[in-house]
Image (cartoon, rainbow, N blue to C red; front, side, top):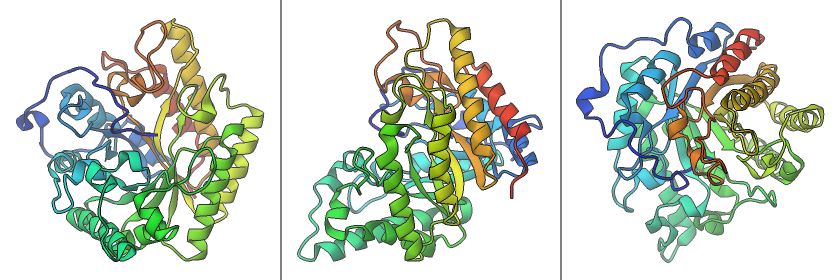
Length: 386
């Protein structure tokens, strides 16, 4: 549920920082009491977050020295919010523009962080570059569609080589209402082979990388078809021996984030039973799990900040305890570390009271919130990884 065009202009929290202000000093690990350190102590690959924004007309969290400092202190993994998507990398069919992504990767490496890749194909036409939405595939359209996919994936993976350890190869290929495969310019020509081609190309270009299918299915009744569709897609990939290694569970939880999360959202017994059935089926396919875009929505919560923060922290703790009980859960990525830059500020409308939403770990004064404490407690109580 991340969004390139769904993020509104967030205002300039710190202005556009000069590259000299990025503090590209000696590499250093996250602090000993960081969330990343707590995760690694229990055998997780680590904890991290997205950072960036990816376009000059969007306020970018990467340009805020305070946000970078939070990441440097807490995170062992980073991922570009938008900079490695087609719409940012591909201004036209002939050229690539790696500048925005490269500066994030350089910074992350300079501070001892591993880097995730997001995403080699976002299978929603509305988030394709305009030129790709109207692309002329010529007289042999299926051949050209496959060539274009493979060329893009190979170019990106080769550019970053082993600097990226895991990729969201395909993002959101299943329609959340029907559970069927989305119709895009690629799927019209290649059908379900679209997904197989992407995983094959990624594996060949980055044989070291752990390859992820990423989606935002949830536990609510309205998400039943979505869950079924994702399991069908994964089962097909596995039966054809496609190199898919992990299921990326986006984890945009809480009221007002996804269609299945509207209204009260307590993650109680019925919710957990439906979610367990889905996750059990996924791990039975020999897939590991990663939580790739974690934040907590708050629609319908009170204006009082202490009450809101407590609701968010309690829901997050219940959810993470449940997810971490699966020893196959490999790492946790927040979808932003500071409220001001969260995509949820403009998704689903503003709060009726006009107050800033509080879906992330740090407030707009760069201070820790109860959500950060809840995540720390969940890591401390998690069983050791398998």
